[in-house]
Image (tube, one colour):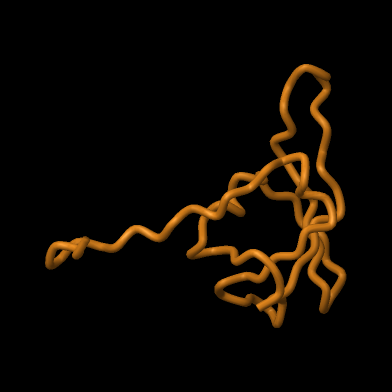
Length: 85
């Protein structure tokens, strides 16, 4: 199906299962400060055991810097790509 003129094509969403996030590898679509490759080092468990996790800690392989992001942010292919590309 062709995209109409002037419309932006939607990128497909990265399928993610929260239970399989730990130790998964990701590539930033736009590297910042030479940080391009990342690994999920922790899935932050919510206080309520019945609730689903919302946050993950993702570590830059190059610098070792860790940042906390919402795991759903990984679904956006314009920001993140699965694996180390």
